[in-house]
Image (cartoon, rainbow, N blue to C red; front, side):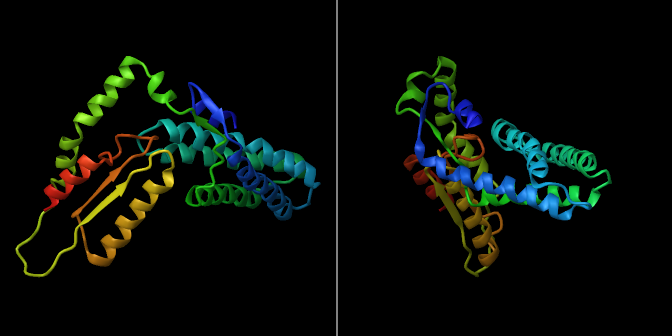
Length: 241
């Protein structure tokens, strides 16, 4: 909740709708504690394993809530560092509780955390309990931010041209498929994810190759793809034609 509040600055508004999703993370922590206790020999009290599991929470939380939110480049190296830290954390913690090395249990714990993070992202189980107030983002934006947004709007045609530069139609008589994706809602990442999924599935099924373009609004990264607007859609259709 604190990380979500920090990301929604400068004037976040509390929303109770995201509260039920916090139960998903409670279930994850309890399951991790039970899994660590089940794999360890000798077994320790569940309360001790629960404390150990809670101690591991800040690392994946900071990875997903801070590192992935602000870094525009791939953050696989950060994920590797986090996995290594968690492995060492679980091994030392389990050894302190059981008096024996617990390498396999620590590895199982790391794998569970990775699987839980992936499934949470895939299911979009993100407890957004803070949202920007209506009009706040524009009303309190600095002049530099407004200038950056205006520049982003005016460069969309060039970005579409650059994205379509690899698109070629060969001289064969066989029909060819083209893909144009449009994700207009930028405050929920599920739309951008589903456009990416559609592009991959249709690309494989119809052998689209490089003949694809996605227009995506994603408030996490406005430069990952050309923005989705009516003007951009018309321009992209003309360029594809």
